[in-house]
Image (cartoon, rainbow, N blue to C red):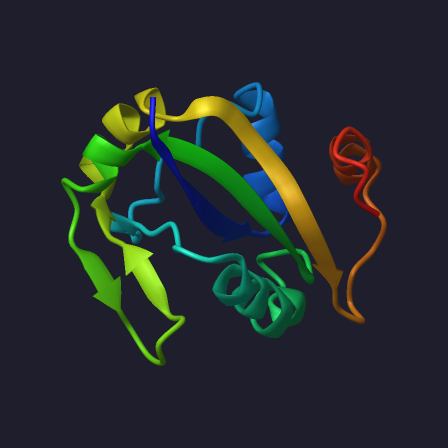
Length: 136
């Protein structure tokens, strides 16, 4: 099966919810989040995690980049949105379609990088998740 790798920057709360879902799915969107938007490349995901999540109290002043694969044919059912510069490409998945999207994830979700802001306080649950991916 041909797959495409996508990335999603997340904060502490979302990372722990992903862990509760056995690293196989993303949690449902909150009522004020009409879209789930994975991004198409790691540099863009890292930019969000580093420049936004690390400054955001709701994110726990930390940003983690997750990576996962979906089948190419499913990926092609979405229009790629460019929301800034050339690297700022995303898929916009309506929140009501997230369950189907999660069902298309191949080989689970992994953490590929982590960023911490000055307000971050060590969280043992986060440390345990990162340890399984050799991330500090």
